[in-house]
Length: 69
Image 1 (cartoon, one colour):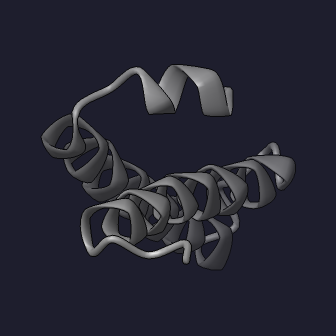
Image 2 (image 1 turned 180 degrees about the horizontal axis):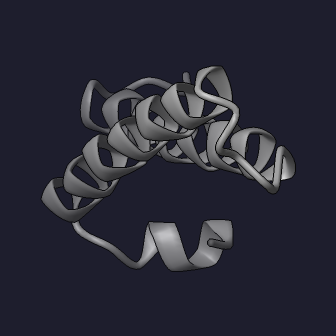
């Protein structure tokens, strides 16, 4: 998911997507522990998506608080 796509979402949608990605990461780690995970890169990709979502949420918080000057 690209940052432009995330920015076009509402804050509630971003928070829901963040929960989905965190749950997905949990499941991927569980699969890794059980030796069922075939694509180890999915963990890295999911972590990056979580970071993108958190970054954009933080940007919105700063805008809302009147930050930036």
